[in-house]
Length: 463
Image (cartoon, rainbow, N blue to C red):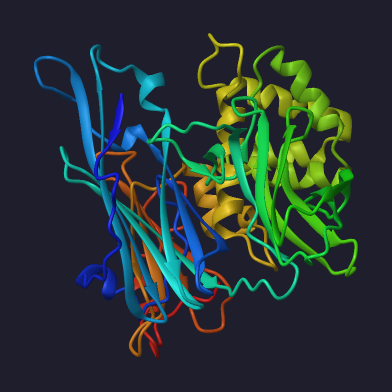
């Protein structure tokens, strides 16, 4: 049973030296061991309601045997800063107990928690810290968000919230996440697959004209390339007033693995005003049965450019000779070699799934989610490559730029007795972080990397 303490939470002004010290820094989106999303809705008195959803793996907590059962307890601390000023806090405990010692499957389950804030327009920094009270280990994530003004004077919508569960209910459990009569389980990661085959979308429409007329809704799904996958609608609705609620649910099992964009389009049929909102999500494909046949069909369905892009990613794991052999083969042989390669790297051959394939897809989604921008796909960046190759680091030390140094990060992994590190730097002219050193035996090593982060240093290495 999961217990969340302090149901009547108080949002308070705070002063925290640790977080306050981050305000003047160039905060980057780091691959944290939990997922956080921020969605905006119309608030009261011209303000905006910001909803923070956290997906927290139970693996972050240490289970303790107290003699009667097994339990963990942690503290979740969500804080907001607006335009450099401390704004609000929501802190609460989470605790779970079980009679039997939880197995690996039970530990891998994630719980979703939500915090809500009423904020004014401006630039906001959202910070979430999760502390395991047994180990005292703290996990932290930050997100930069521009708080927009949601005005009823024109047609607009809230953000598009995607969920793994959404249902209209009259009676709500006090511990459930609900909004306007809908009980929901938000998906802050934006990752869906066979384990979460249903995708639900929730949004609120504002600024409908008061004329007892109608409005029209369309949903569009686009691939990463911009190609339209489907359109749902047009749906003509009778206006319930100046605002309304829109929901949609569909099964993602038929979609290929990759990045998608869902669009909600709303048209006021009387004023002809139109608005839309987009939300990206990711599909990963776990192979539950007949892996070789399914994987062959997935590869065969790829265009040549898509297949080459996929081979580039798989090349992160290959030796130089393996990669060159694959590149010199024709398309049919390449597909066969890829199927064989994934079968050999299967982590647990006793199962029907290919765990290496599932792991790769999860890491691809994570890299794209964390590091993509308008110019680059996250999987093609240095930090994305390291995430795909080695998974999430156990810790990250960010060092923001100042007058003496460039911005850089140190990533820590514990794959050996001493552990491995990766160093990434972002100089003033670079659009992204670049890897400049690692002590991993398979990676480029530059033990003079400290000189590279110093502004004006002449002891540099040209990449």
